[in-house]
Amino acid sequence: MNYLRFEVRLIGAERAPWRRFLIKKAATFDSLHLAIQDACGWENCHLFAFRRSNRGGTIAGIPDDFEARPTPDARGVKLAEHFKGAKPASCIYEYDFGDGWLHEVRLVETVLLPERFVRRLEAGERAFPPEDCGGIPGYENCVAVALDRPTDEVDDPEELREWLGDWHPERFDLAAAKRRFDL
Image (cartoon, rainbow, N blue to C red; front, side, top):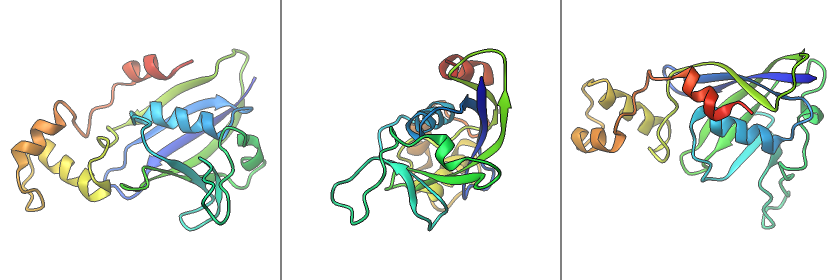
């Protein structure tokens, strides 16, 4: 069975969290969206789009009838339509248009494996930001508070620490993540 090995990295963070996983080559961009959500610990409660670059055209996302140029439905756009041959080998995944989380999605390679599965998480580092924390500036504030670093950007560090709960920027448990991710 043919699989695509992707590496997904948060853009703009000082120490960017990342994940690497395999997904069926025949999958759609919606399947890739769900894989990124699960691999990164996002809650899948915001809009998303895949773009050719930061300023490039939209490859796939959630269709919006009010856009001048309609967004292709991610459920109907196959990964193989965009990731064919050597180029293009990457795209941008934007999640939560309010916080503006940008992820570089890089195709590492295409692999042929004898076993069959839908997707498999292979590696990663660091925790992705908590949902709705305010984009990269909010994430960096969360990191500072979680690591007990001084910051003038947070009015009430104790309140933020309580909101964060047990979230820690360096925590990533691959085995636990695989139990949620692998299909």
